[in-house]
Image (cartoon, rainbow, N blue to C red):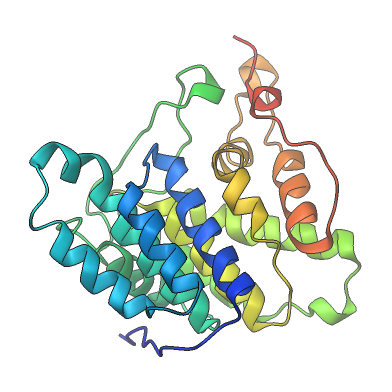
Length: 266
């Protein structure tokens, strides 16, 4: 399996600030908040005073000394945010299912014992937007086959021949399908988001990182709604919320994004 290799690149301060905003914003999908120390280090990194590698080293030293309560509250957010910044600065990714494992391993090494490993069990998750119901995630024994099919289908796409609306629809389908597999025990939305951003960058799209800074919870809920149906209650799979997100992300759309709009009626 190919490993995800990193290089230390220098970026303009505004580009680096966007990476930090997106990286920290993505932690909100799991209710994680950064420490004040991370904000200090990120600003030093943005100003070019320290590298991202030095940020990671300082965080490692810092979390050897802080009380257990603070470590539990902020360590995952801080460390994973710094790693996301490093990956986003790399800017490229190959279109292969194994990359999901590599990204997950890199982001969550030392955080989860199962970093980079597909789950060997089935899962359910109660969702607020579904009034406590769950998406039907992929069976664990089907995950590899589903992902290989999804990636093979994506390789056949010709975005240069598509309209903006067709591009948005296809990116919605691809990211929604990856996310529905939910191959890892935790960290699926962050892994999916990082992969999709790297992939879109690698094929020439410009990303509005403010979307992940401000609307990461909306993004996750939109993925939920794109994978949920209950025909007995008249509820169909709904891609409209995810389409609004990606239109704003890729084409400077101005759709209003409101989590409350996605809550299904009981």
